[in-house]
Image (cartoon, rainbow, N blue to C red; front, top):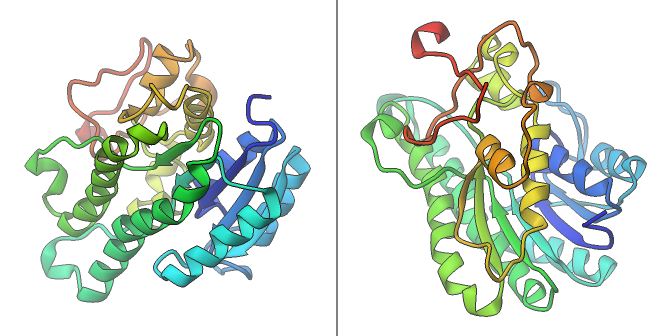
Amino acid sequence: MALRGKTLFITGASRGIGLAIALRAAKDGANIAVAAKTTSPHPKLEGTIHSAAEAIEKAGGKALAVECDIRNGEDVKRAVDATAAKFGGIDICVNNASAIYLGPIEDTDIKRLDLMFAVNARGTYLVSQACLPHLKRAANPHILTMSPPLEMHAAWFSTRVAYSIAKYGMSICVLGLSGELAKDGIAVNALWPRTTIATAAVKNVIGEKLISMSRKPEILADAAHLAFRQPAKSFTGNFLIDDTFLYTKGGVTDFDQYRLDSSVPLAPDFFVPVNDKPPPGVQIARLAELA
């Protein structure tokens, strides 16, 4: 029950990875602000801020459903202020919300480009900035951003330049803020999956086939929960890969529990450093197997 009474502000928590992180914290009795745009059911996307809040309450936590478009600075401030007013502060900021479009430069119009830049990099900056006054007063404050390690290889950027820049912008926020906020004892870390995760983004953007080759969002929820339990003053500036972190820091050895289908190989995610080897027994598909 390490997070009992702690308050988490999670962007994009109405579904997918954000909701999984919220539900894991709720089991400890945490307070969670579900900061997202979806207030009514979407034809292609499951979940709203209200259904997420209901699930959090059922899991044992306390929830605040707050409509928030993180591209809008006033929205962000209002959502953060409402969270602090309801729960008495904010202990953990999770920058989970992200926009994705995977396409070459010829196919990426300005609207898509601006959306990814505004949600991913700019949104992460705005939310972190708004939470900062409350984090400075917290006992063990953390900022956790769902973004990749900063490894500069053309292969990560080629054919998806706009998305890669937007995601790496989130990671640059992590790198810079970890140094800037060290004096305040605020941990700033990034978390990224080794494999694709079974979310609406994978299904709608990358492809239906990869769903069975993906892991459940719960692997990131468990990794995030482990990160939040680390001492903020010393555990900062890390770019964590989910299974490596769970194995080395949490002692987890059973990774089959996170698989959707153990009969097919796991699909690798973008941006995982080539020298970051998976834990023992974890097999990742070769690119040829994804064709």
